[in-house]
Image (tube, rainbow over all chains, first blue to last red; front, side):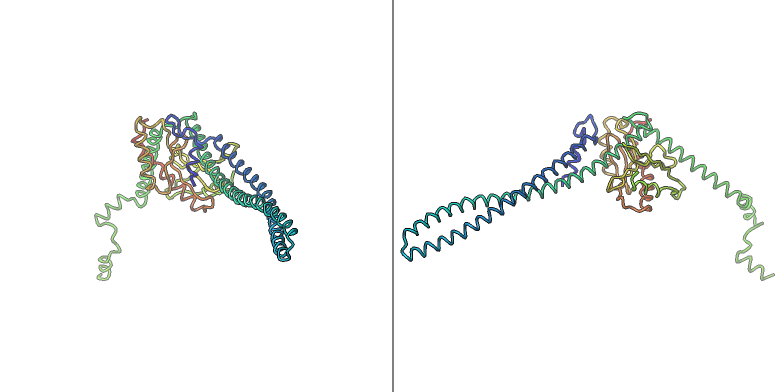
Length: 227
Length: 140
C-alpha cells in the first residue's frame, strides 16, 4: 500500500516546476539501504525474541515452582494449626510470605516478558511486510529508470544532446510525406498492373462496343441453341 | 541481454504487418542499459524502446520533450493526454524525465503473438497520438 506515493518520493524534482520528475540511482540506493535496514531490524528482533523467549520459559518454570511450593506450605500451615503447632506454623507462614512476594515479583517480570514477546513478534511481522513492499518498490522504480534511460539514450542518439528530442512536428510532416509517397507509389503500381493485365482500357472499349466479351451470358448461350 | 528481451527480439524477427511494414530490431546491452530499439519502416524517428524488468516488458516511444510545447499549453496538453488514455488501444501516455511518450506494458510471460500485437498496435498509435498533440506543439 502507498507504494506509488513512495515511488514518487524517489523521483527527483517532483513538485518543482523547473525540473521534471526523474528517477535517479541515488533514490534507488536509498531504497536499497532501507531494505537492508528493515532486514537488520528484523534480524535484531529475531535475536531479541530468542533471548526473551528463553528468559520467559525460565521465569515461567520458576513461577510454576513457586506456585507449587506456596500450595505445599499453605497445606502445611493448615495441618500445623490443626495439630496446634503454633511455632512451626508461624515459621512456615514467614517462609510462605517470602515465597509469595517472590512469586509476585517473578510474575510481574514474566508478564512484562509476555508483552515483549508479543511486541517483538509484531515488529518481525511488520518489518518483513515493509521489506517485501520496499523490494517491490525498488523493482518498479528500477523498471521506470530503465525505460527512462532508454528514452534519454535515444533522444541523445537523434538530437546529439541529452536534453532535447528532435522536433516532433518536423518529423511528423516528413513521415506523412513519406507515407503519402508510398501510397501514391502503390496506387501507381496497381494501375500499372491493371493496365498490363489484358490491356485494360482497350478491352473495356471493345466490350462496350459489343465486339468482345459477354460470350458466356445467358442470352448468348440461348442464341447458341437457337442456331 | 535478459531472456525476456531475447524473446521479444525473436518474436519480431521476420514479423511484418499486413501492409508489409516490417520491424528492424537492434539490441543494446551494456553496464548501463539493456534494451531493444525497434524501428518501424517509415517512422524511423519514433523508435520503440523495449526494456524488461523481473516482472514486465515495457515498450516505450519517446514523442517529444517539454521544450517543444507552446508556452502556456502544457496543462491543456496533459489534460488531453489523460482524457485520451483509455481510448488509445493497448497503449498509454507517459511523462518521464521531461520526455512525453506512449508506452505499452505487458507480463514477461507473454507469448510471441501477443508481443507482435503489442508492438504493431503501439506503432500504429504513434502517428495518431502525435496528430492529437500537434496542436500544442511548436511548429517546426
